[in-house]
Length: 202
Image (cartoon, rainbow, N blue to C red; front, side, top):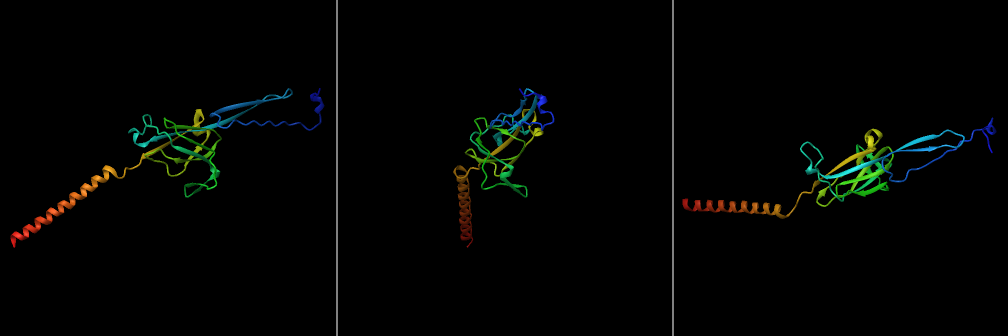
């Protein structure tokens, strides 16, 4: 049996223990404690964060800008990149061509989707596919993940609005077509009236 006295006047033995959280672990604070029979307990706390995305119809926002009754949109596709995979020039972010997203997913029926298992840092969210009938975010969205930004639930909220795509063709085009014909017809009436007037005065 090895006793503490056996290590007198010798170089201390250091044991390093490493543990990793599983991918996509829910946001929160996790503790790990390690010790040996001859040492005191050593406790380490690891914080992991999440990003909650809410994709919604921008036209359903209340007059007070509240999202309480906003309509969530299903099927918006997103990709998340680390800051190392993005180049920022004149405040405009561009994802590098060889970049691989660290996460991909889509909004659910209520418009929400959550990304878990993130460390503190800056990330970029890209909307890769927009719900039918809507126009999505055209540029990467910068998201800062920190203890201050995440709050007590360790989650940063990102709200992404979509606007309805303007309708082309159909009734709108027909309205302008009829309007144009009406103008042409009116011009014809004026022309005929002018000719008649000139004939009577001749």
